[in-house]
Image (cartoon, rainbow, N blue to C red):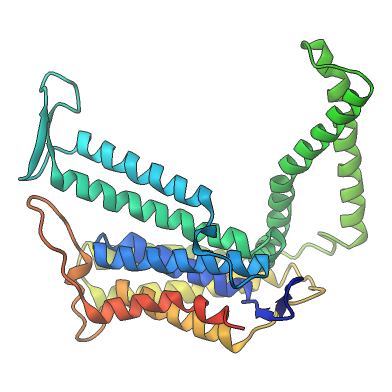
Length: 356
């Protein structure tokens, strides 16, 4: 699959929707696992490069300057980082390097304001901004219909209903704009509550008409048709998988049983996948244009899995201590693990797919 630019004959490869979801999952695992500035900064740089690349590809231009990145993402990131830093400084009074002291009679925020609290607040804000940027990439490259195809077949009807609900608000706003323009051409002005009645009636009629047309189209395509099949195996597998998943995490966190914990987590994953597969057999559906897999998808998925596993799995000979950076009680220089940093660079694999 490829996207053909209107301004250039160059074709840009398109990744499979599941590849982008796995890439975002790897980014989420990396950002939520550590507060080390080295690793957080590396992930943020890679996300920014991917976001700029996807904007260039969407515009069909490879010569677009770097500042063409979404201004809204940058603004939101600055607001989040600033808010997190201020909030953490005012609420956490721990640390040796005191910047200034607020009067103790002020509730909650009274006391010393430390450099350690400022640094930790900035790091938390950077993590939140990175998560927002990663999902901004996902929102740019995947339309709603592509995400809908990734939903397990067992939950496909619910996903269709949710996608319809999500698209209702934009269509309603567009219809309001059209009705207001039509009323303005006829000389109607919005002066009071009564003046909105000529707007509400066409809006209600249009919504009902669209609903009827959508219901007829779904019925014509056989949506939710077929006989109901009663099978308790998917429910039992799902419940057993969730119980095993919880037990695995308890073994790892409470009793420090890493081997047994990871074995239970792996078994829980298999049970959940089997339950979803069995439940999906009751909801068969076809795809008119299935998304094709390419070797680039394998590269991106493999790199994302390796990067995420370096943050959560106990690799032999890998020192994971630098991941757990904590600036309290005294601010220290963060350690750098070269193997973890190299694994993190794998999250930049989508950059290789943008090369024509």
